[in-house]
Image (cartoon, rainbow, N blue to C red; front, side, top):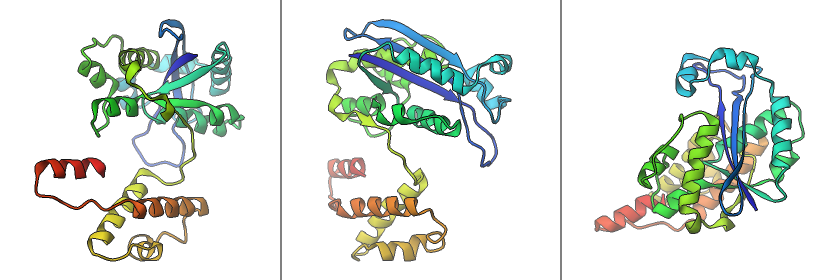
Length: 267
C-alpha cells in the first residue's frame, strides 16, 4: 500500500461571481508501506477563469503570475497526475480536509473529463484523524498540528508540494493512532455549509420549544421563501440531513462545567 499525501492550491476572487474557482497547483508525495517518501509530484495549472491572480492569492501562495502564465492547463496536468498515481499498485489518498478532492472533481467535470477515477478513489481525511487523536473539535491548520507535535515546519505554507510534505510529517507522527476504517469516498453535496448549519440550529430551536420538529414546520419557519426555487437534489439532501438531526438524542443541560463542555462538543 502506498499513501499519496495530496494538497492543492486554488485561485480566488474578491467579489461574488458565478464563475468557478479553479485548481492552480497540485502537489503530492508518495509514501511506501514503511512511510518513506519515494516520489513527488508538483505542477502549476493555468486556470480558465481568473487567470490573473489577485493580490491576496499571490501573497498567500507566493506563486508568481509569470509562472501561472506559462503553466499547462488542467487537462494536461491532471492526465500527468493520473499517470503518476498509476505507478502505485494500491494506494490511499491522504488529504488535510475534504476540499482538495472536491476541487479536483469540480475541475474534472468543468473540463468535461471522466470523473470515475476520483469518485471511486478512497481518501483519508487526516484533519479529522488528527482532531480525533487530540480529542478536540476545532479544525486546525497543518502548521498548528506540526507545532502541537513539536515538529519543525519546513517549506512554504500554501505551496502545494511543501504543504503535502508537511502533511506527510503529521501523518507519520500519528500513523499508529489512525483508524483507516474511516477512509471515505467523495460524495456530491448540494447544500452549502450555511444551509447545513441552518438545519442544525432550526432543529435545536424547535426541540427547545418542546415542539415536534417536522419538515413542514422547518420549511414554514426557516426556508419558505427559498424552497420552491431550490434544486430538487438540494431539497432531498436537506430532508435527509433534517431527519438525521431530528433523530439525534437531545442533550440535557447540566449544572457542571464538564457537562456543558460535553454538550458543546457534541454539537
